Length: 136
Image 1 (cartoon, rainbow, N blue to C red):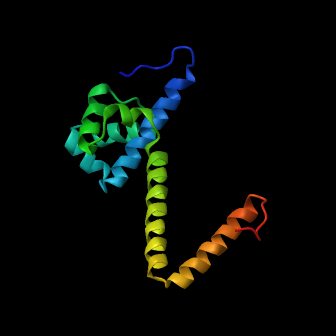
Image 2: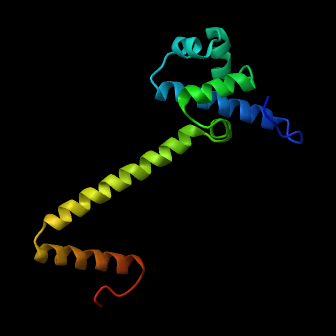
Image 3: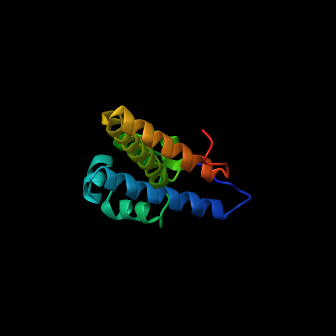
């Protein structure tokens, strides 16, 4: 079993629910059914269903087998809310893609239009900072 905070008995519940949420998230992200996961790690579907719902604590061997199945570190799987981590990564990726698209479109413009846009962005930035937009 994994270590829990003895001072805070609710830490067990929080960790158990975080792990359950991660197990469901990982299974869905890998487009697997509960039956498929159960066959791969050799447990019954009812056992796995309890792990995923958080009504039963996963054993170390079960968590280790699941971390191998999903190609994720054991520590990472039990320590973080992976859905939040994945959402953050997706948002960064989307921002990166949008930035590259803007850059491509900007560079395709004539130098006159590039200068006009740069001046407008400078004015917007200066106004947002509370400065004088007439200065260059």
